[in-house]
Length: 405
Image 1 (cartoon, rainbow, N blue to C red):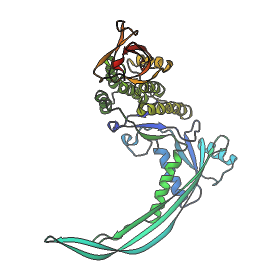
Image 2: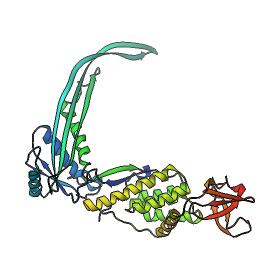
Image 3: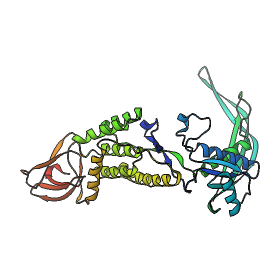
Image 4: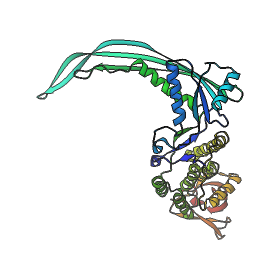
């Protein structure tokens, strides 16, 4: 079982890493056979692709595990001799002979497109005894442009069918001038620029069919208590303690959206994206904020990706268990089943002030709970100085009208 999400040391900077399903999914993909055809830039591009397949999700030979991420070894490669445009039967033979599930054919080109030398007139400014002096001089300059392009086709090893055909290109320019006293002109060679373009092309290509690490920025609400919990997880990776701290906040403040969001994020970081989406949606009912709305979309997309990654590549997330989380989830599920009523409103006051919510429109009726000021609610109706509200968890009650805005 592989942990799918890995807490980055930069979590305090609101980042985390995840494995992403590629654009073209091939079930059971463990090895890709790269056809060894052509020469020159074809060979360079092919070698760059093989390096990326090894290192895309952490399997980089000779690179320490701490630097490379998780050494999952999901997709490897093999070099095979074959045609640049193989037929179905050739693809099947190449795949079978190398125990590969897919065959990749690539071509690459590159050339220098421009080179020129020229001069530029410049002015040097100095100060002597407070007097400004200018001196005119001329420098020698050079500029070189280059372009590169690549085309790739990916074939399914089982039946030889083409599952992907893509191409790309790029240009680079290198320019330098020889200032007085500096070293001679330093500009990249055409080969260096072409190699840079193809290196970027290889990464673009590999992530189309191989799972890959992605670094995603995640925002947290600016809440001091929640920030303390995030710091605990950041420094030690102790999500259980962070979740416990967030749950403690909910004891006195049942509608603390940042705390609910943090618990959801802990679930998402530990392979429980579908449940995280439930808590994010609950947080969004507590606080209508784009932070929580975007988190719902993200977690739902992650849940779908987890299914794809497990089915196609055998990557199964490490599902963590946290004490007390089920009760929070059940509360969120119940809220989701209750339709939102009324119009948006808000309880007056600050979070450290508690407002009584009565069962009926009679202020002498039972108090069903105390809610913090600044809680977002829904205004349903009014009666004799009392306002009927719906709370974020779906409960309904009454508060005095002067406490609702």
